[in-house]
Length: 498
Image 1 (tube, rainbow, N blue to C red):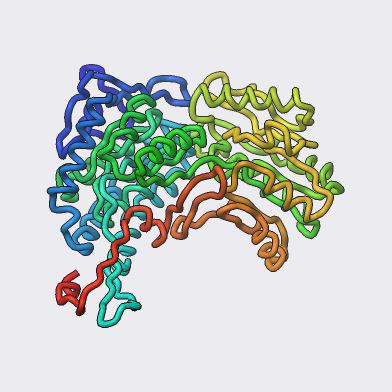
Image 2: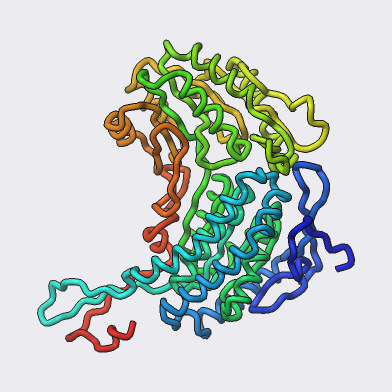
């Protein structure tokens, strides 16, 4: 491709192509996806765009690799050795992965290495989980003279669909458990962030992953929908918006395909009376600016005792003013741009709606005056927010914090639970026993004391419209296996070899 373009420091051999069946192939319709930097508003990369025919080819390749190839029949130790090799290769390409992340979505140059390192480590972690995972387990049987065997086998062909905010770490959370389980995978990265998936595909080739086991098809929404609808896909693992998740769930439900969904959130931080105002202000102001607020688990609602509201609002606003906004390539920057123009416009629309519905705009709300290019927005605080209002109920996916008054702790819990979502939460208190009691009452999948916390070596996922299933740790293996019960007259000798 004559106009091949990649960010500085990123070396991909065939960005203009797709990876299907172990081969780098041109898109059937010759499509191209352009990647725009949110720092400069300039095109920084071009990659091949998969269409419907390419999706069908990828499914056919993954289907053949699963039904007839060696991968599902290999021992877990053999698959684990290949995943460890992939992890080592990816760690060697850390700088490229960081450069891709920074260029595509404006990730901070200071925090991007941590996110990339976490993703590379996921492959090695699942190799180790595979060593002890109970793929074959003998269970007591209620039948006389019967040996009961509980077998966990790979679910089959997996469509792994990752979002743009943390494209590498989330994609590895999907492909690592799928691969160690013996599944074959079709990677469908977001069109805004395809580059890391190319590096994953190249690492798979170098590590010796058999042809068809890991495929790559960047695409826009229409072709992604075609992939999900393909009956050759046994399971869809999707992270993204609840709107898209509803569509995927309906398609998978129609044909009883397996599905894991990690969707949106409107997570609440409950501030208790014992927690110092200055500390709460720092936690809340510095959390909402993480990844420019573009985190599904973001603590975007702060539910506070009514008598603390004004003092805390003043302290949060003061802390937000100290946040250094700038280009994500500058090591001094504390909050970079949002990922794309449409995201900036979406956030501005919610800010306008918050003001129109009567919330008090106490800080931010506009574009920084010192930046004349890039998709930047100020950290924004609304006070006296009605929990029923749009900005308190809908996911903004930007650095916008809503401060909501509670009469007492029972009221605070009720407000926290009054949401369609249930992904994350926090209780700001110095009393761990109080945190535990309140956390048990919150209808959400993950809760941390005194901040936005998550351990991705443990199960992560949501209640209600925040999703279905869990990713992370040994429990993250379960969505990629089917359970089979075998009843035999004696214990087979073949078990010893598995």
